[in-house]
Amino acid sequence: MAIVGAVVLLVTLVALGGYFLYRAIPGTGTSVSANASEAAAEGVDTDEMGVLYIRVVGDSSTVFVRVPGGDVLLDQELTQGNSVNYPDNANGLEVTIGDPTAVEVYVNGSERDISDRGPGHSFTLNP
Image (cartoon, rainbow, N blue to C red; front, side, top):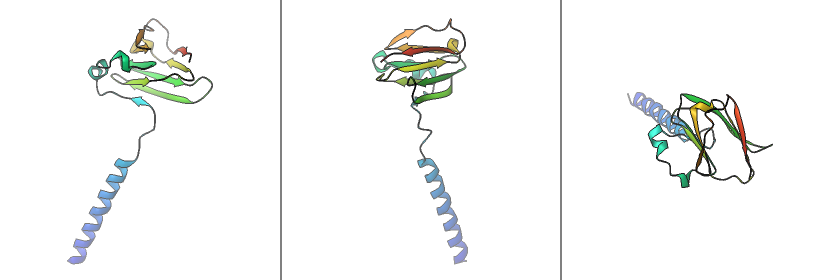
């Protein structure tokens, strides 16, 4: 009977260890700041938006952000209520929005209306 208790204890400890190990694994490492809802995203102060702030207000849109000729910072489909924020622009940013009608774009805290642009609209922010 003691052996059965020891086996149950061992299995429980292994399961708990696996669970906590899984919880400790970091995410994908992207700089996406996903808000739980659109209401949470609306509470962002324009002073805290940084150089580039993109919020999805439609169903979804792909968002591609990279340093010109360099590292890809984001290549992801964001859904309604999600947002991304880039606080600085030391090397410039190249941005491509899959569905411009589904997003609000703020550059240096000022809204840039791109809703009349076609799918895959791109623009560059110079340093």
